[in-house]
Picture 1: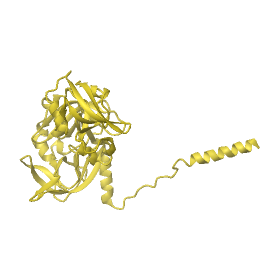
Picture 2 (picture 1 turned 120 degrees about the vertical axis):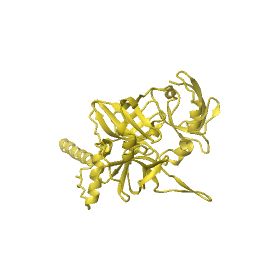
Picture 3 (picture 1 turned 60 degrees about the vertical axis):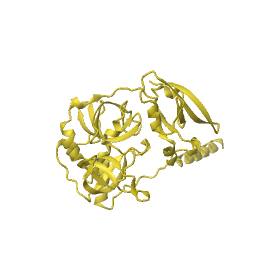
Picture 4 (picture 1 turned 135 degrees about the vertical axis):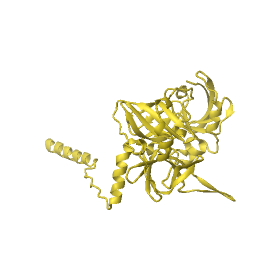
Length: 352
C-alpha cells in the first residue's frame, strides 16, 4: 500500500512539474509578402554590427565598419563623444564592454570614428559607401533607423520611414543631410540608417522636436535628419588616417550619470515616487564603480546642491566641475528616500 501511495505522489509531482514548462513547439513564421521577408532578413543581417557608444555623460549609437587585425572602427556622431573622458562599446546582453582607445572627429560635420581593440571576432558591416562607392539615395525610398534610444533596454531598436528629401543642408553645408520620418530619439544619435537592400546610407543625427508659430510652438512629427554617407565619405572618411586619432584619457569625474528631474518624471518606466514632487534637481540614474561617488551616493538620489550652490539642471553640475582636477573635493547635497520619507544628506566627494 505504501509503495502505491509513494508511486501516486511521484506521478502527481511529475505532472505538476511538467505543467510548469511550456512544451509547445514554435510554429515557423511565414511572411505573407516578399517585401516583409526582405525587411526581416535585412535587419537580422545588419544588426550585429550596430553598437552602443557609452560615455561618461550618456550614450549614443554607432556602426562597426572596419577592422585591421584586432583593431575595430565604429562610426558615430561627434556630439556623442565630444565630452571626452572614458568611453566603451556596448554590445547588448551580458557581453563584456570594450574600452574605446582612440577617437577622430569633425565637429562641423558632426561625425566621429572611435577605435577599440579586441581579440573577439566581431561582425563588421561591409559598406560600399565607406569604401568609396557612391550610393544612390532617392526621395520615397523606405529607410530603417537602428540604434538605442533613451536607455540600454531598447538596444538596437528599429524604426521605419520614408525619405522625404534626399538632399538637405545641415550645419550650413549643402547636401550634407537626408530628411526622413523614421523616428529618432535621444540615444539614436550616431546610429545607422539603411535602405531596404541593407545599404548604409546615413548616420542618424537629429530631429526637429517643435515648430515655431505666431502664438508659440507646436510639436513636430517626422522631421528627422541623417548625415548622407556619400558626403561623409567625401568630406571625412576618404582622408582619415591614423594621425587624426587622439588617445582617450581619463578625466576627473564625479562618477554619476544623471537626468534632469523633469526628464526623469516624464519616463513612465521610472518610479515617480522615488523623488519628491515639484523639487528641482538632477536624479542619479547610474554610478561609476571606479569613482568615489559610489561610496556615498545611490541610484534615485536627487542632487539639489553642490558646494552650497543650487542644482536645478545637468548644466549646473557641469558649471561646478568646469575646472575640475584630480583630487578636488566637492560637497554634494541630495534628497534620498529613507523609510518612505525624504531626507537631506550632504557628502564630501573626491574627484578621481
